[in-house]
Structures are given as structure tokens and as C-alpha cells.
Image (cartoon, rainbow over all chains, first blue to last red; front, side, top):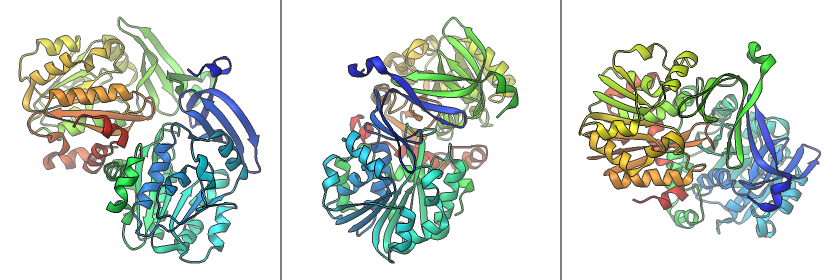
Length: 287
Length: 287
């Protein structure tokens, strides 16, 4: 145990439908922004963590499960990855994974809540660190819904939606109008990627987002993995594209370099994670 | 919410290394057996649950994740499945999955703690139910370590180890001498299966059990899935065999019938779950 924490430890729990998941540690900072309650918690197990409205979002020693799963199927799969759009992702983890690719020329990171970025920069220093000043990263404090509405057609090679659960400010990130705009501003060979909730704890939201993407794009497939700090610990990310399901096939030219620096992701893991759809979900999804 | 629970609800948490996972409900029964503290908890989310020494073991509306993952790769993979051995498994869930196969002629279920069976029969009625009286099921209240020591060579087509974490009475279920005896009493074309802990919350135990099985058998592979009530929610089961890795390939003749009655398991899911090994585990396992 970290000695400096010993005197003030407490449990912080996220509650979800009759279950709770807690970490031991202490609250370092809590603020009300214009959008939500933001908490920075120093945990013994996973280091510093970020909570929004009392839900665990990320933790320094745990965040790779989430960020590697969201980013690499998209960035290893799209032939061109010059221009990336990230909606949300104010902790910086998704941007860090994108910055691993030398080919990436520009990342627009559209975060609605400047306080999330401010506190992540200050407290979660191991997540993006020096990457915050990378000249390829363009941070804009804007509403992502408006951003995709007003962006011109065929603007991005990859679009990443790294938002919270579909309640509060992130609710519209699961709407048809938002997803249709994402398709419109995505280049024809590009890939769209979004976190798509737990197939267990957010069963209905998960089915809805995958089915919506299958209606809007030509190809859409969920990938299943583990995020121990999220409700049920079982999570999903869904990838979509127009011409072919290119997110299923990481390009050889990128595999070696990216694999070296990953904790979870590998071509083997990715292939398995796309296949590991539980039977009850397979029965409910449209083909 | 179940109305009859409203007045007496409380949280019951399992603590593990600076994290805790709790369910809301009430304790129905708590007993000290000769081996452990046994708790029956009525949860709002997952129905009635069993805890051993304050660790979640199973819950009526959650147990299929665990039992389908442990049983079907073994029983769909072994050409002959006449005689099955289950070590542990006192809640009855593993036996139920085995009894789905008409080909199975006999199941020896060796549980060390009669109290676990007594309380499971009484409180967790949805798990095995009428199956407890199936004439193919032979329940023996014995120490599983002794059982495999004194059983003659080539006795079983499939051996299932359905034990708790490798502390307390289940500790020796991860030892080389136990595993060597399992190999000795397994028929040449048979399959050995064990729960093999979380690659995250029990990282070292997971690596050790897989590596041990790779040393003792000719083939051994872990499969990764989700058990939300266990530490980290991320779990594994490892399968081993002598002549070929037959646990990887479910027999066509059994797939349709078994798939119909499964919530999680399908040939697609199984294939993915065997592949979805995170990069950091792949680096640590012996080949």
C-alpha cells in the first residue's frame, strides 16, 4: 500500500442496478463543471482515476484495456489515416494511442467539457503526458454533436467516439442523426469506431448501437473485451465502414510497431475479441 | 425491485486487493462448515447467490457465464464422453451442463464440503433442480485430491475441476501432483478442464496454472470470458489433452443440440474466446 494514503483511505463506489464496484483510496479533487460532477480519485490498486457523475471513466493503471481496444482495430485497419476525429476522450488516452502512428497527420479532439481536459492534464499525467503538446493534436472545446453537423463531407479517415454512457451529455452520441453525420463526414474507405457499452450491464443500449450502425453503414461489428472498472467488467466497442469490413484486418505494415507497445491489443487478441460474441447477443442483432 | 426485499436490503461486498464488488439484497443463511464460511445471499440483480469465505461463487441469474465456459469446450470436444469426473462443483451447475449430453453415462461429482451441496439444493433451486436425482449423477463427499490419487489409470473421458481460488481447501487443485494424477486417470483421447482464475486479478495464479498444464499435458490452452461477480469480471478456463488439442474443435454432431440451450456458448464464441488472449499474457506463457 502507498504509505501516504494510509491515514485517509476510503471506498468510492459506482452504483449500477443493484451492483456496485469500488476502489480504495482518496478523493483528490471534486468539481462541478457546466456538464457534470468531475472527481479525481487516487486509488491504491489502479493509481489516479477519473469519475464523471460518480461513474468510473478511466484509471492510470487500468486504461489500456479500454483505449487499445477502441483505437487499434480502426487505425490498423484503415488504409489511410491522415486525419482523425475524436469525439470526447478528454482524458487523452485515445489521442495517445493515435499518436503512436507516424502516418497520422492531424487529430481533432472535440471535448465538450474543458474541465475534464484541465483536470486530466493536471492529475492523470501518465495517460497523455507530453502528448498534449504534440503539434498534430488540435483540441477544441465544443459540442461533438454540433461539430459533426457542421463539418463538410468526406473530412476524416477515422472517426472515434470516446464518450460516456448514453445518459447526460453523451446521450446523443448514440442517436441516428449523430451517426448519420459521422458517416457523411467520413471518407469512403474510412472507419468509424465507438465504445458500445456492456453487453450485460447495458444490454439494450449495446444492441441498439450495434443495430443502428448496421442500418447506417454497410458493415458494423462489435468487439468484446474487459474493462474491470466498468459495470460488469465486460465491455464492447463497435467498428463500422462502407466498402469493406476493413477494421477486421490489421495492415501488416503497422502490426509490428504497434504490437510492441501494447498491453492488450495484438492481431490474435483482436481476431478473438471480434468473434467472442455471446450466443444471446448474436440472436438479437440484425445481420 | 423485488418487494419482499425492500425492508432489509444491505450490500454484501467481496474485497480483493483494493477493489470491491458488491450486490444489494439480504443474507438468507450463513454457516460455518468444517472447511469454510458458507453464505446464501438473495440479491436483487442476480437472484440467490452462494459465497464461500465471503467470495462470490455463483448466482442463479449469472451462473451460465461460468458453467457454459467450463463445460462445453470439453464435452463438445472429446470424442467419447461416457464417464465424467467433476472435482468441486457443489452448486450443481457443472453437472447440469454435463447432463445436457445424452451420451454421458456417468458423472462422479467429488465435493469436499457436504454443506455446500446441502445449501445449494435447498436455496439455489434453479441451478440443478431435478438434476440432483438424475441416476447418472454420483455424488461423493470426498477430498478431490485423495480421489484422483486413488483412482486407477484411464478412468475418465473428461475431468472437470470446478474449484474456488487457490487458497483454502482449493489450493492443491493447482499443484503439479494433483494435475499429474488427473492426467494419469484421464483416458488417452480425453480432455481435462479447469477454471484458471482471472488474468488480471489473479495474474500469477493464471500464468502458473496454464504453464503447469503445458508442462504436464501435450496441449493446453486458456479461454477468456466474463464472470461479472468475480474479481475484475474477467475470467479464464484452461483445457488440456494429450494427443491433439481436441477441445478447440466442437464436434458437429453435438453443436446444434447444445447451442439451442446455451446463453453464452456457441462455436463462434468459443473460437473467439480461445483467441482473445491479451498481449501481456501471450508474452508470459510458455509455448
